[in-house]
Length: 325
Image (cartoon, rainbow, N blue to C red; front, side, top):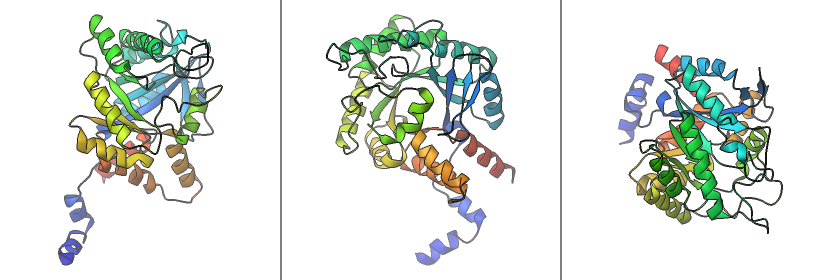
């Protein structure tokens, strides 16, 4: 047996022939941040190589990813105005809605997924409507979450991805989309979204950190695995077309369990903190750039069909380079 394994490792050509897991550009989703204003391409120190774009400059980024073969993006809006009802989130002229219309007009081939949540849009930074006592009102919140999802689809979004983790929001979104003639629009549910410390750079980029408290009452305890399976099952029963695990690298076991338990597409979000740790280690010379590919490959090997990652452009460049050699 060992001799056989050695023979299969003998050359790069043979290793390629028997490789069990392969990454493909079409499996990658590239997150994009949209800000208000004009001529904006804002560098983010916490996430080297990632920028925030205004609607008028996003086309340049779409041109670049198109050349790399990336056809799937997820949009996150960063509004100027925030209030207790997150009114900019469902406004017809909200930042995400305008960005979707622009991208679908100039780059209609790109599959646009929108993050559906309220934290960037509320003046308190939580993912829903608060009661007088300062806790999130789940039932009232899902009414607004459904309004946001509908406004994104009306603007031209190909898929919506609710990330709020409120109970019943998938069923409510499905109901509202169906009532308005969007039965064919899929929902990618943030099903197992953990209350993680790996979100730090994102919260800076999206200006979405809570003004008080934390999100542990509606996001998942990192210690729990069985709960993740229950959350996934509930979202599937409510009508989710894709389920997601977030974060990815510290939750590879959850991705694997989801793959073993559910016969449906599974997404994994390789989040900002995971990106920043590895990217900074590469930039400082602590690790070789190949570690980027290795880390994302582990997410695919664990069972994810779809990988949402800020490394999408790095991975696409490597895959194209390998194909040309």
